[in-house]
Image (cartoon, rainbow, N blue to C red; front, top):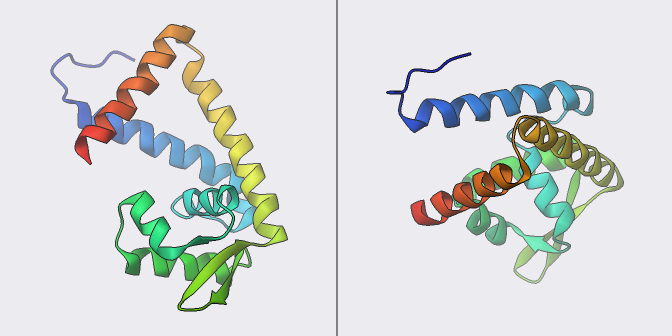
Length: 138
């Protein structure tokens, strides 16, 4: 497919995001996990003992948004919240661990799809530029 040279960056970013969502939603539909929840699940999996405030900071979202999503993950049996003084530690369950590992595997497959028509150098440049743009925006 050929794209018009005058198209700004936003439609390309949106297209990649939507295709990634479609890819992952198809893969995890049997897990009862939506595209919007999977990054939180993976972060909880990788960060033992994380708290809600840390997730809000990491994803640049307000705590109420994180709280709603944490509740969804808890209701689905992926995590549990453990009271610890004035905060609740978020712990992954066995089901959550299994699903997080599965999703991370799918993310690796997605990256392979992205790399398919790029040289290693092009891919590394792409990743470096995406990180730089995100850092500059935040």
